[in-house]
Length: 85
Image (cartoon, rainbow, N blue to C red; front, side, top):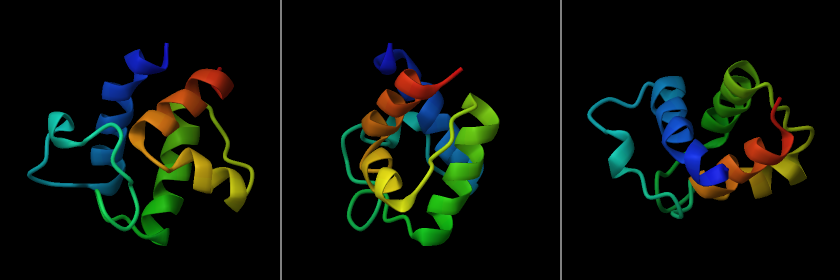
């Protein structure tokens, strides 16, 4: 089920962070979101938490969970699949 969510998660990232000039296909599902990979920062993480709650009804309760959830697009999709409504 989480593999079906990957394109939706990629689009949510693009929309939530207003990334221009990048398509969902260009985001590597297994690349790190922070540091290398997309190079997101803590402000981006907050925006993604809000977007996940709004779009998928999923709450990230604490920073430790967030570290695991935001490891990659695939990790986000897995978390949404397990915890979504």
